[in-house]
Image (tube, rainbow, N blue to C red):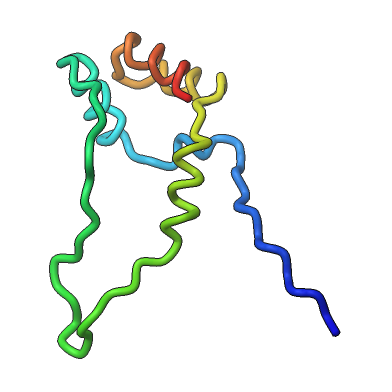
Length: 98
C-alpha cells in the first residue's frame, strides 16, 4: 500500500515581489503618501461568465495568501525600484514590509 502524497509546498522564487506592474506600485505609494495605511478589503469578481457557465471556481487562493504572507522586497528588488519614478519613502516602507 502506498502512503498518501505529501502536500506540495509552494515555491517562492527570489524576486517574486516584482511580479506586479508599475500601476500597483504607484498606487501603493499614493495610498501611503495620503496616510491610507489601515487594513483594506479587496474583491475578486468576474465581469461576465460565458453563456454556457453558471458558476465560477476560484483556485489557488490558499497559495496566493501564502505568498502574500511571505512577501518580501529583497535588496535587488529595491535597487531596481529605485530606478523607477516611485517615492523613496514608499520604497523604505517596502524594505520593511513583513
